[in-house]
Length: 104
Image (tube, rainbow, N blue to C red):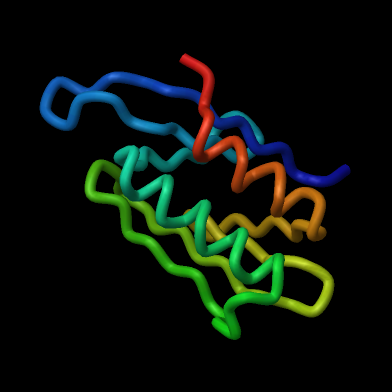
């Protein structure tokens, strides 16, 4: 079964509104809105072929782990806290959209 991503908004007393990316419900990253938008734009750019980058990396200020995405021919391999998720292009598009429009 493929890993499941969940993207939600949460609040932090120092950073304000954060975008929380959870992998299979337990591994999580908290992005500022700007960080989430940056990762979203990078995912969209590689999916659409507008970027030749082979690696997407972000170390969110409010998290203890980093987001790493290796761009492959068939999608992106996301690694968070040693956990790996292989995303096809449709899943990459969905993640990019979710990072921009995370529900409260």
